[in-house]
Each structure stands twice: as structure tokens, then as C-alpha cells.
Picture 1 (cartoon, helix red, strand yellow):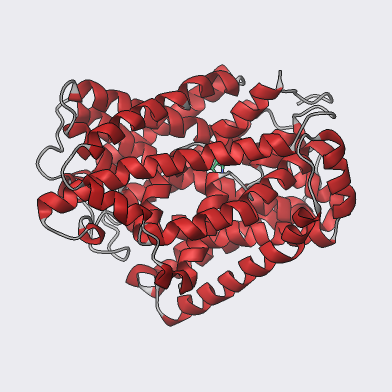
Picture 2 (cartoon, protein in one colour):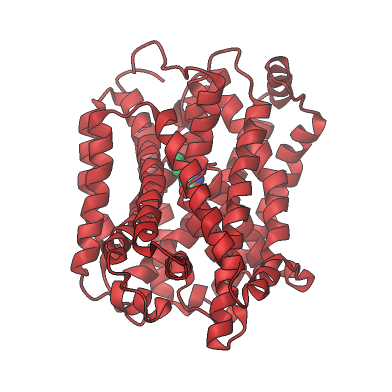
Length: 491
Ligand code: TRP
């Protein structure tokens, strides 16, 4: 980037790009599986509470901070206090971890794209995913070897990221015109089909019926906050970066509100498609809805293929379209995630974007191969859990504390009000200073405590220590190192 920052062409371009970053696999893959694991209706209340207490206030904060300081995350935090630069790097580093495991889902999607040609999953969708696609081992301790076609999928994913970058599709807003509406239209189609299948109503009622008894479970709350942070691309430096490309007078609060609602509306909608299918699967297997599948993290790869199978005509065509949209949806997020991390390096050391991208992929691709092994699925599950539920939530907590106490938050609020359509009341300050950080801290502490009594999904302790805490600590060390190193230009 030269001295003059890039600019969004217009306000819709900014909002569309922000929605484009937010809407991704998080809506169609992650939200349904987390909701299902947390008991469907039991999840929705914490989810919407998280959206309004943390998601939207934090989105306003991040977009506004980037816009006000005109810098990406590491630079913005360094501007608040030089010592905070490391925090900015850690948040941006989380993006780097996310893109590495995000690529796994894309690798699965490539494999399914191929199988769409013959609708190869027609016998048993659950078994097909676990055995024929993943060749899943019994647990993370049994790693096995890389499954060759998953490696091919992985290779295709990283090549696509590389090609997009090479060709310099900087115009994110154009890609979003396709990758946001098309999946929505397909989801609508699947939903209509889903709702007309026997048993669908049981799935929907499992999705919508609140289960107040489960609200006492801190695990569900942590997952809700983790999902909100992930889905709104928060606490990973991206929205700060996007805000920094806004002009000085650009509107913030309303744009953030629109982004947040559009994103979570999409997730909510995708939930209907998935849960109606789960209801149908429950009916044909004669099982209750919570027991129909063992695919956990891979839920989307069971329900959507099932939905495709049940379409009255043109299944192959719809299968191809569905997996192509999943890929486009994911690849632009993957690209943005990678950039969230590399832009910081580019800003500080002036390395050319192309070389940076190549360098990143050369490191990331071999690491991502872990997820293509027979035990890879479990490692993927562990990293996803730790990065979102612990990494993003800790980063979100620290961000509240930094802005709430080390920054002139009242002045910031007045500033935002002077440029925005929706005026922020004192509630926003209260939220960021007290409510959100306290809630996050309580949930975190309770969950860390349970983590010491039993292990997540009964995985051996060393695997969660290594893949979970290990990953977070490794990136903290890396962040400290990047912050300490002297750059070519002061940020
Ligand atoms: N929000 C994205 C999704 O739902 C995931 C994500 C998190 C992301 N942080 C990001 C995407 C940063 C782009 C940039 O899939």
C-alpha cells in the first residue's frame, strides 16, 4: 500500500464487502453444527444474546477504530499504546490459524464436488462422509496417513487462493454479488424441499423450541460467543482493516448493524434448511433428532447432500452448483483471512504482497496436510474449538478491556456519533466496559475449569493440549516476536 490508503468506492461497496467477509462457511457449515451440538433450541437464546451484547457493539468498535485511526489491527493497537502491538498481531494471527483449518472444509467440498457427478453418497450420507470421504480413525491419537484425494482437495484450495491473489481480484464487492445471493437462493430451495419431507417438523421444532434448563450450561454460552465472533469476523483484525479503508466521514453504526443482522439472519435461515433435513433423517432412521448423526463438525456434509438427493429433478446439477457456491463462499473468506494476517506484515516490512502470499502458502499448505489424515478430522475439531471458543473469546475480552480502559471511549463514542446515522447512547460504553468483558470472563473461567476436569469430546489430554492450547500459545509467541522486531517503517 502506498502512502495513500485504498478506498471503498461507495458505502454499499463497504457494506457488501463487510457482509462478504462475515457471510461464509461460518453460516452454512459452522452455525448449524454448533447449534446441533448445543441442543438446537437451547442454543438460539445464547446466540442472540451474544449477537446483541457482544457482536454488534464490537463490530461498531472495530469498524470505527479502523476508520478513525486509518490503520489495520497491529498498527491501530500500536497507536493506542506501543506495548499493545503484540495483541494486534495475536488477533491477526488467529486469522492465520483459521485459514489453515478453514481450508479443510474446502478440501472436503472439492471431494464432494467430484462425487456430485455420480451422487455417490446415495446409500448412507452419514457413513459416506465418515468412512468413504474421511476414512476417519478412532480418535486424534491415531493419525494415520494423508488421504490422497483430500490432499488433492487441499492443493486445489491453496492454488485457488494463490490464483485469486495473483490476478489481484481486489474488487471484493464484485465477487460478493455472486457469493452472497447464490447460496441464499440455493438454501431457500433446499429449505422448501426440506420442509415438505416427512419428519421435517420435528427437526424444526428441535431447532426452535428453547430449552431453558440448558441455559445454565456455561459451555453453550462459550460456544455462542465463539460462534458470534467467528461469524462476524471479529477479534481477528479483519473488520479493523476494512474500516481503515473508509473515508474520514463514512458512516459506521448503521453499517455495522446492517452487517450484523444480515449475517446472523443468513445463519438463522441456513439452520432451517439443515434442521428440516435432520428431522427427515430422524424419521427414516427411527431415532430422536439429537441422535441422527455422528458427524459433528461435518454436519453440513451430511444434511446438504441428503437435501440434494431429495430434490425431485436435476440432482447432479444442483449438487454441482451447491458445492461450487460452497467453494466460492469459502475461498473468498479464506483469501480475506490470509490477507488479514499478511497485510500487517506488508505494512510493517514492505514485503511485496505476492511474495508474502507465496511464502504464507508454502508454510500453511504443509501444515494443513495434518487435517487430511485419517485422524485429521479430530485435530480439525480441536483447533476449531480452541481458536473460536478460547482464542477469539479471549481476544474479544482483551479488546473490550483495551478500548474500554486504555482508550478514551467516551471521546470515541462522540466521534462515532458525529459521523453516524444511529446515535450510540451510553449503553454502548457500559456494554464494552462492563457487561461484555465480565460475561466473557465468567464464561471463560468456568469453561477452563471444566476443561481441567474432563477433556473436550473425551480426546486424550495431550492432543487437546497440543492442538488447542499449543496453537494459541505458539501464536502468542509469534505475535510477541513480530511486535518486537523493528519494521522498515514505523506504523
Ligand atoms: N466470518 C467468516 C465466516 O463466517 C469467518 C471469518 C472469521 C473470516 N474471521 C474472518 C472471514 C476474517 C474473512 C476474514 O465464514
